[in-house]
Length: 300
Image (spheres, rainbow, N blue to C red):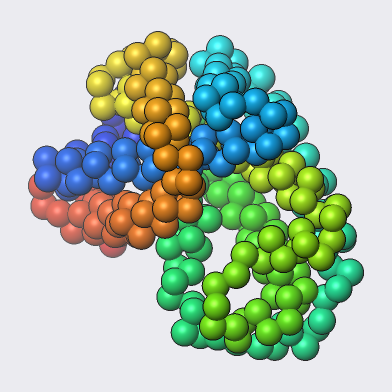
């Protein structure tokens, strides 16, 4: 940020500085692929929840979700967006707590000792996808004015809280359904929970919608910032073009294939996240330290 004299530095800027033109093109493609795939997944799932809850057509529910949360990102100040996001996170934790309490009544602790390592590789894309926040880090650095200690604190806590929630949730799922780990058939654990406990369904829908809402906000902010950097637009200004390019394609694709949620998640985790946030940061760090082409390389 200091070197470029800009408050908004994205992966494109860093890749251009460290990896050259080929690196920039690959980063751009991977970044756009991940974000559009996930935004499609979020709009598809949220519209399904709204349709089931309000009884409105998918077109209206998908448009309503996109306009509401996209409009918040476009018109809202950092303070307003932060307040709404904070409320969503609080509601997520509250609904999650209720869900765990209700679902954990039938936990069989012996089930937590069961293992099925053959099924583990299939979970890697989703695990990688579950902890993707790197797209928001450039925005975070801008909002925190480059304060490194605050950025580190936000990243550590922002990783630790979801990790704790995932571990608790996995324990509830694996402990509630006997023989789930050893089963050779693919089953939907949430569907089994709904069938065994009627109060779980509405709580799951509320929790899912809230989680999607806060994720959607983060990815919209990250993608609009990325597109603005790509198009060399001034930082700190909301441009109608960037939001139109960000919000409209996912809305259309989610309506063309309402069942696209899980497919989009799997593709984004497999082909996007592991490349963009697994390979490229290491490559950029290596270039930053050892390349002779940079004016001020960092000492090893």
